[in-house]
Image 1 (cartoon, rainbow over the protein chains, first blue to last red):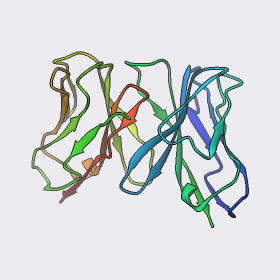
Image 2: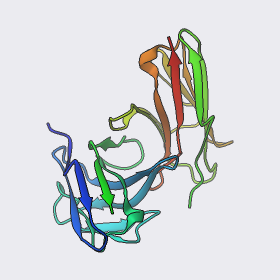
Image 3: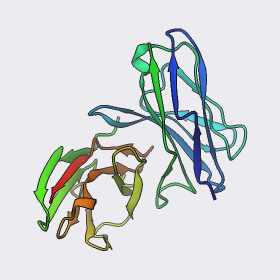
Length: 113
Length: 108
């Protein structure tokens, strides 16, 4: 099993550009999450999904969109990149809720200039 | 917004010392609490998943306790080693809200 795979690893965007961060998992997990890591702020939840076709907002959803058309994939879309979106983005998945831990991808480092 | 707080923010200990950190969370509507270990330039890895009041979990020299009635969990490291240096995160399982972490540096 590859686990949770994120692409790309690094990306530099200009203000106003758009891009999609890809996340895929091969563990047949129902739950998937997107977090951003800001210095000194820990991990903030952007969006999450409890299954294919179902998504919901986290703490910091503004400026992002997600979709979950399959169990495996949970892409994160930035439509109009802003410098405030410079961060490290982590995708994670868990089999179910509550007693099941999160498995994280290796992260995508995004810089918006 | 759920408030999950960790203390201290950072900690330097000598090799061989034992140490502990605290995670505080809302005591109402408890669901589950997770502890993760996050090494620099890597991804967080799960240490413990705790769901019941009074839970105690252990993995080698690391252990954790849970008090859901008063809303706190402790993580203990016995005989710290340099390889224990990492940031330790707790996460409250409703929408998986993370604390800001305790950064541990073990000095050889």
